[in-house]
Image (cartoon, rainbow, N blue to C red):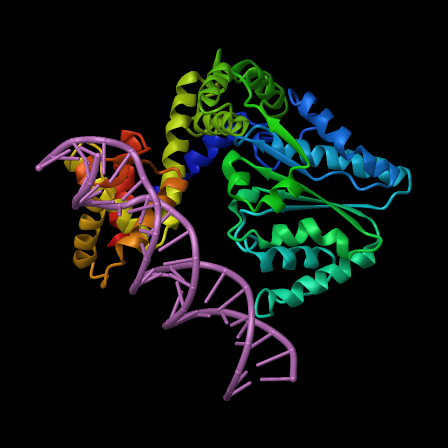
Amino acid sequence: MAQKTLNELFDSFLSREPLFISKGALQETYTPETVPHREEQIKQLASILVHTLRGEKPSNVFIYGKTGTGKTLASKFVCGELQRRAAERGINLKTFYLNCKMEKTNTPYRILAHFLTELGEQVPMTGLPTEEIYKKFVKKMSEINSICIIILDEIDSLTDTSTLYDLTRINTQLKNTRVSIIGISNNISFTNNLDPRIKSSLSEEELVFPPYNAIQLTEILSRRAEIALRYGTLGDGVIERCAALAAQEHGDARRALDLLRVAVEIAERVGNDKTTIAHVDQAQKKLDIDRVVEVIKTQPRQSQLVMSSILYLKENNAESISTGEVYEIYTKLCKKYNLLPPLTPRRVSDLISELEMLGLIDTSVISRGRYGRTRAINLNITDNVLTKSKEVLACELA
DNA sequence: CTTCCACAGGAAGGTCTGGCGG
DNA sequence: CCGCCAGACCTTCCTGTGGAAG
C-alpha cells in the first residue's frame, strides 16, 4: 500500500508543470547582472575605488546598512567591474572577500589563515602563534606586488579587533603592494566601540545603504520572479505581499526573496498550480519558526537552559522579567536536568546578552529604585513560534 | 537630601580542547 | 614525547549606577 501511494505521489508530482524554472534566482547565492535601486551607492563606491585604475591605493571604506540592503551585492559588483577594467589596463588588482561571521573566520588567526590559503599558502588551521601567521601574511602580500582590496563582510561579528588594527597598518610594512579595506557592517554602533585609530583608518570613507521601500522591493522581486518562475503561475498581489511584509522588516530584500521562494515551494508541495497570498502568509510563518528553531537548536546546553527559564517565566508572569528571576529559575532547571553545578550569575548575564544578540529576546536596563537596577527582558518571538520553541527546547534538553 | 538595592558589565585570569613543531 | 599556542568557556573580583524609599 505504501508502495502504491508513493507511486501515486511521484506520478502526480511529475504530471504537473513545475512552478519554478530556475529556483536559483530566488536564492541568496544568486548574483544578478544589475543591482537595482542601489545606483547611487554603487556610484559612490565606484568613485572611491576608481583610483585603482590609475594604480593608486583607494581609501578604506566602511559600509553600513541593515541586512538585505544590498551591501554585499553592491560591493562584489563594483569590485568585479573594477577587476575587469583593471585587467584591460594591465593593472595588477586583487580582491578578496571574507565573511567574518562564518565559523572559523571570526578570530585573528583564522582570518589570516583564510587569506593565506587563498594566496596558495598552506597553513595549519590552528597551533601556530598568530605572530608567525601574520609574518607569513605580510611576506606573501609583499610578494604579490599589486593593489589589494579586501572586503570584510559582517565585520561587526569579529570577536577580536586586533587583526583590524594590523590590517589597517599593514601598508607601512609593504613595499610594492597596497592594501585597501572595505568593511561591511549592519551594526552602526560597531565603530563606536572601536579603537579610535582603527575607526578613523577604517572609515576614511563611509557609505550608508538605506532600506528598500515596498515599491523598490516589488520591482526587485518582479525581476527575479521573471527569471525564476514559470509565467502566469503567480496569483494577484503575491509579489506585493512579499514586498510589504519584507518592508515591515526594515526593507530586507533577502527576506522578500525568501518569502517568495518559500511561498512557491509551499504552493508546489500542496499541488497548486498558482501561488497565492495565502501561501505567502504561510511562508512568513514558516520562515519565522525555522529561524528560531534553528537558532535554539544550535545553542549550547547552558544557553538553552537560560532560554527555557525565560520562556517559563513568560508563561507564569506576563510582566517583564528580570535577570535575577531568570537566574533563580535557571538554577532550578540545572538541578532538574542534573547539569550541576550551575553557572555563576555573571556568566548567565552574558548568556542573556547573547540571546539578545541572536534576536530571540529584547532587553533594556531599567532601574527599580530601591529595588535595584536590572534588565527588563522581553521575548521577541510570536506566539506560534513560542509554542514550537518550547517543544524544541524540551526535546533538546531531555 | 542621602541610602542602598540588584544588578550591569569591565578586567584579569583559570581550565580545557585540539593542534603545532621539534 | 614535550612545551607552546589559540580560542572557547567560565569564574572571581570589581566598580558603577538610576531612582524609590526613608
